[in-house]
Length: 445
Image (tube, rainbow, N blue to C red):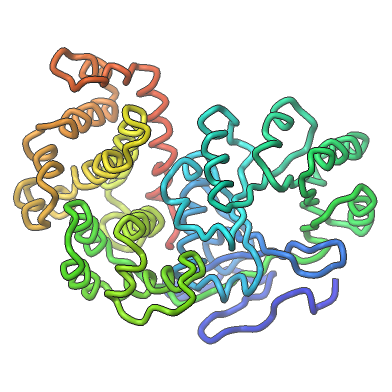
């Protein structure tokens, strides 16, 4: 492939590292964030899109222990850390999405017209996923199926909910390739040949009618590096506390002014094409009004999840417990009331704040009163009252391996809580652990 197909321009303070570069020095790893991108070409060899890839450092290979966290970091770096225009130019970006992030509100931070959601092969296409993909396609997202290597009933069932099918040329048997491509093309889907490593594979893919191409035959991923923009967790916690009680613009503005790194990322988010404003936002107040509090909350949650700085959050298992608990409570809230996003948001924040006092060496009442948390969330944690208090006790029991379902089925439990059966809680607990399980070992955002 000719050099004109690769973007070699190096914007100010953004470094494009050699694809074969070795590990950076430890100091560099602490100062920079990294993001991989691999070109996706059309039939004429022109650049069509990039797949964005998680990179822990300057070395050009992935070290992923948790798909959801890796994607959260890719999104945070592309949108808030480096910038969509720098990473993608005028092209689209493909990002890997596992089941956890697919069903999470965070996905709405991703500009639908700039990113393709690449559904990992581990995602089971059940009724919940089908509904979610239908909703996201209506919102303007393109959906790609990743690592397809055989014609199966599961693939046929998934095709109506996808736009692009990525067929793995390393894993697919050559005698099955033609039929697989024919069936996918017959359903009107865009065919993308991935892991194309030889000219012979490229020619074969073209003959079979593939539309897009990706692989080492064309280019290895580039690694982009930019100065780290840390997001202090105490500031994010205070911001989430304000959002939990519907604080006014003046309060949000005052808190954000204390956290310049969050402000920078917020302005990058709102100035991106995601909001279609047609103009740049210059002031913090404009950014808050244009973004909306729900989007700010999503962004803060994403940074809490993606970041793993040098604060006690990275090493303290209590914080990992708080993260898992918050996700479990959010999932349980959505299971009980699927269309009540406000209840789910409150449940998530209750979990996040339920162990903050331990991290900061204080008492629950003292710590939460200082934050000015919403009263119903504060009372759920300090007094154990209300629906959120019951949900918190259930989450605590589930996290300890106790009989949480008996709390849900108790006579004094809120109406509908009996739906949290042992089987449901086990599934939700596993999903929550997956969402946050690799946080301690995670790399810096």
